[in-house]
Image 1 (cartoon, rainbow, N blue to C red):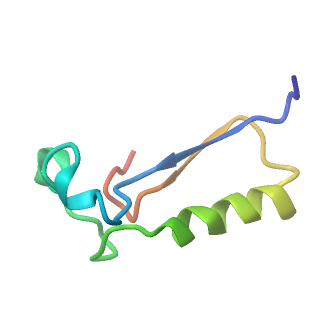
Image 2 (cartoon, one colour):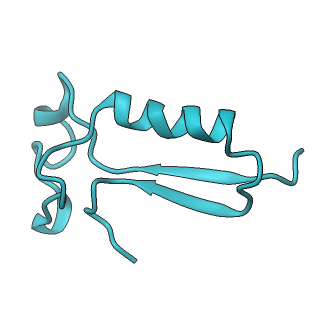
Length: 72
């Protein structure tokens, strides 16, 4: 097991099943992404690419890719 650990925490990702899954397409708690839209698989893929490419010095992080739905 590697000591370099980063966890990717995706927010609401749109797609064909988005409107019929979970809470019927709604975000729990009635929140809205600050960016004004649901995420896309490409949004997640971009962060995965960053972590695989030049993210070699990022360790012990939980990185939220949620468009601002969940703010610490």
